[in-house]
Image (cartoon, rainbow, N blue to C red):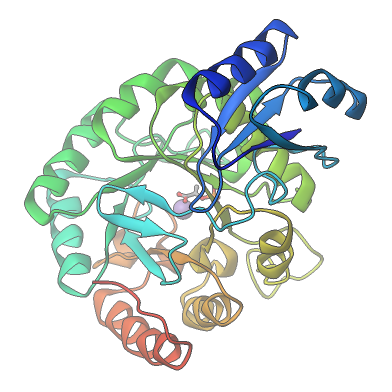
Amino acid sequence: MLIIMNATATDPQIVRVKERIEELGFTAHDIPGRTRLAIGVTGNKNADDRVYLEGLPGVLQVIPVTKPYKLASRDMHPENSVISVQSVKFGDGNVVMIAGPCAVESRDQTLRIAEQVAERGAQMLRGGAYKPRTSPYSFQGLGEEALKILAEAREKTGLPIVTEVVDPNTAALVGNYVDMLQIGTRNMQNFILLKEVGRVGKPVLLKRGMSATLDETLMSAEYLMAHGCHDVVICERGVRTFTSHARNTLDISIIPALKRVSHLPIIIDPSHSSGQRFSVIPHALAGIGAGADGLIVDVHDKPEEALCDGPQALPPVEFSELMRIAKGVCNAMGKSIGQ
Ligand code: PEP
Ligand code: MN
């Protein structure tokens, strides 16, 4: 349910409404908005529960939210959410560019690539410290050592950092080092991980599961939000289909569909959707054209030596090319991209 308060509601009236919500065994959530004061309610079982709240002083209206996701739903929050990661803003109408290596392989490699993407206009740095690999024999990531390297790269370039969390036991540790936590496609429905990451208190980049529906994706966002993290950015990174010409199929259709029912920003990962360099730029441009709020792109200056996902990494010169063309597309759409 969503409670809309009168514009003239007093602070004690607001406090009383929240107390009443808790007395009923439900949870109250502040819903920020420019034009109205609203309180979200989760945990209630049916729409009739509204009668307990409708008559309270200061309450203008109680609106049932019929979708299974509540906090992620546009019914609860009609305006687009703008999610801040340091000074970077997702969902403000412009396109955020995140770039960097798939994995942190060494201090040298990461600092080098961080400088190269920063010079070319990236606003955030990506880099995996804990890699969820299909094969147990593949490079698994440098763990905490990589987090230290990422923190140093942030110091040198000023770029905020996003990195993946794969284990509830290291969520808080990762949160100490980086600016945004990533949930990977393989863990989108790891609910124990989602709860723990929600509690860390840092913004989250939630990648869509490779076979997840829109509703399932938003239910995972709801897990994060219900556990304290309201700063969620969704990422479409391609889904499993019958095609063999790409690693995954970039599902452009989810962008307008998600924006219709949710206030959360959505970005595109054209690297993991294509899996091969030749289609990264087309996927990226398609994402921008469909209204994505950002891109997250693998960049490596020696892709042939990369320990993870080399074939899909753009060398810096091709990353510059992506920035150049994407700026043109963004201009035509009245948006900006990168810094
Ligand atoms: C990644 O971004 O490094 C990654 C592993 O992506 P995904 O979870 O989308 O496969
Ligand atoms: Mn990768």
